[in-house]
Length: 117
Image (cartoon, rainbow, N blue to C red; front, top):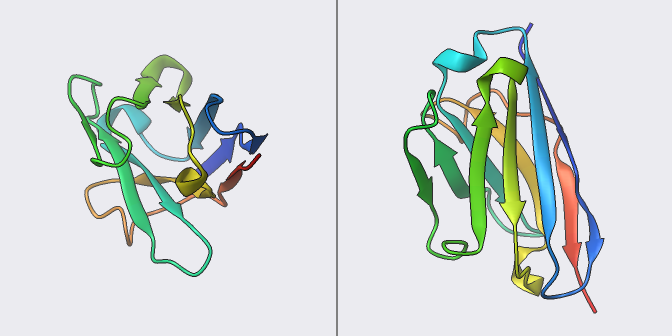
């Protein structure tokens, strides 16, 4: 069955960096567009970034553009999110989500990112 496992979250200070990973199994990862989405306490699920199946194109929410970088390694069925210059507003549970319909598609259990001084 489809499985997505996120890791790499943690508690960091503002201005710090983190690298999230998502390991996929149970489907042909290299054929799927993949996303990072996040949910802050009391808020709706928010799209963060998308990468095409072959990694040729990437897309970012305005709130993270120029600070976050999405990438993937299809040989290892893994997707990454490099997050730099983190802000308190980035505090959320981060999920990797499969496909175009990121809100309803397969999603992992999430990894908590907390940015606080």
